[in-house]
Length: 275
Image (tube, one colour):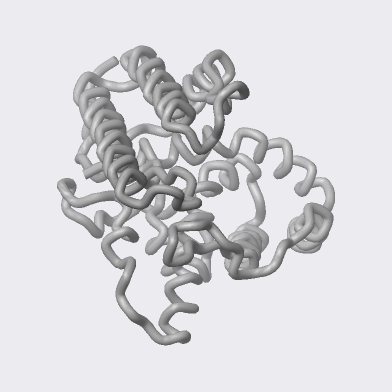
């Protein structure tokens, strides 16, 4: 593979959540060239930095709405491009997915436990609401594509990372990255260790080991798709996230020693938060 040429920079790039919201009136996702809101050295995910600040209800609702939109774009933008919807249907579906996510929101209490703040949306209700927007035929296609939601999300995150590092991906590279992720996830699935207690250190260490292995396999295959510079940036991001997970785990172990008997599980940092 060769370095991304200047011509590749004029190709449509993954839109940022802010760009999608600004362009929602047109919803031309494949026509949006994302502007880089952050310095390449800033974290892709800044939400952690905003946590803990007291806010009023209206501000919190607006923050939740924007966070839901961001999550929908990250998880569904490339999937929706493959679904090939009319622009208005695309706009309406993005809004609906964000709306349902806000309705069924989860949060953490002061003890770190995950609790549901919203209501439970049944599978049938979700299907019915999506079908009402895009029709039953497109719903069936959507549900099929959604089975690869993890790979679509990871492909988007990698593409956005590389764009912000100044070496954007081409459409062909994104398609091939997606195929690599599908292959790796099928061959090396991350599973819960059945014989280990989920509250034990051995359990979370095994889960994190599997995640590191998965990233390593992606890096091993990445040179067949990405340029050397792009691979280096991806390796740096995966390495940072691995070290961040282990640092976070060490802090939790220390906290549990200092608070014996505390009924809390294990938490890990956001999957995509590379510096």
